[in-house]
Amino acid sequence: MIVGFSGNRLKLILFSNPTSTMLQVSRKFEYGLHAVTYLALQGPGRVVTVKEMALEIGFSQVFLAKAMQNLKKAGIARSVQGVKGGYMLGRPPDKITVADIGLAIEGEPHLMRCSQENCQCEIEANCHHKGYMINLQLRIHDLLGETTIDVLLERFGKR
Image (cartoon, rainbow, N blue to C red; front, side, top):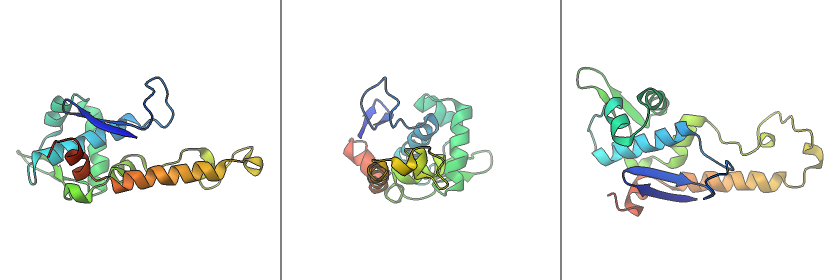
């Protein structure tokens, strides 16, 4: 996994081949990760509108608003109502992991369909690498789970 900043934009690449979709994260997940890091960079207690975040990060305001709703439901972000309303972090950046954001946005990760309950894979009985793929899925989840927003920001000199 490669994580880095390009200007103010955070980049998360599981494999660096730009034409491959192998293990590619969703755009909604990217929006959520960028939003959380943006909020963390603003400091504790600062309320930011979706419009401000969208303009600063360079994302669609409508799509970002949907991601923010998921983050709010998970307690990662908190909404503030009123004229000076918007969003702020719901927890300190050292208590928010990349896995938390992924779960809030996408739900439980599944690299392949046989890792889900009620597998309907036609070759499951004869599959020789299901265990390997499930182990890979667990290792990716562990990596994302041990990477906090604070660590990301510190690692790339943004703190």
